[in-house]
Amino acid sequence: MAETIAILGGTGNLGFGLALRLADAGYAVCIGSRDAARAEQAASSALETVQGGRITGRTNENAVAKADRLVVVTVPFASQAAVLKSVAGSWKPGQVALDATVPLATVVGGRPTQLLQPWQGSAAQQARSLIDRRVEVVSGLHTVSADELATVGKALDQDTLVCGDSKEAKQLVAEVLGRVSGLRVIDAGSLEASRLVEGITPLLIGINMRYNTHVGFRVTNLEL
Image 1 (spheres, one colour):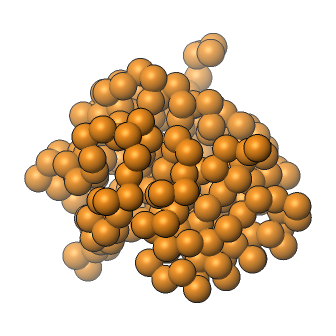
Image 2 (image 1 turned 90 degrees about the horizontal axis):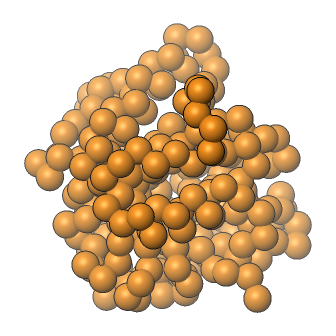
Image 3 (image 1 turned 180 degrees about the horizontal axis):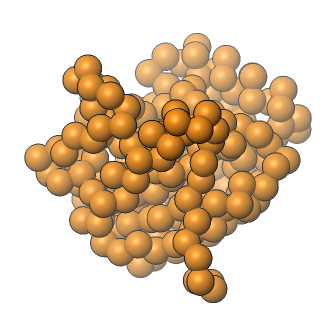
């Protein structure tokens, strides 16, 4: 039986693209949303691309409860706190939350090339303050293009930097994301380092805007 991975905010671009990739890699994917109907619609749409995949749609709360080990948080920064508070009673001890949130200044009317700094230090650290302590938190996927993820069948040729305080949790994230063709996972240190990694996103957005493309991130001279 395939392992089930939940994706909160899976109706958004990043979450939906990741759902396609993970389903294509053989995982059972549960797309979460505040609106169950939207989640079910997204799941149906995903199945048109990954035919024969195991993809379902649920509310965010039910998606967390359905996940075996990994829950991916792909919601905008403006929604992160509200979504995490709404699922507070659904976590299971031993689960891992992979947070991909970036605190872009668009939430306060700023530009997507600007970054806010939450008082906790980073979006990932804010997530840590809102999630059950029996659940480990890892951050990642900040530099991966949603459009590139959605192009199933095309290898990414990108790296993603993951941060977290648990070696075992980061190993789980690496195991799962490593199944995405062309995506290499690099341990970037403790969760505190997320504030540095999250800052790469607006930099890449600026490059994409200037060159009208979808650039990725790659660390050179590193053999894993």
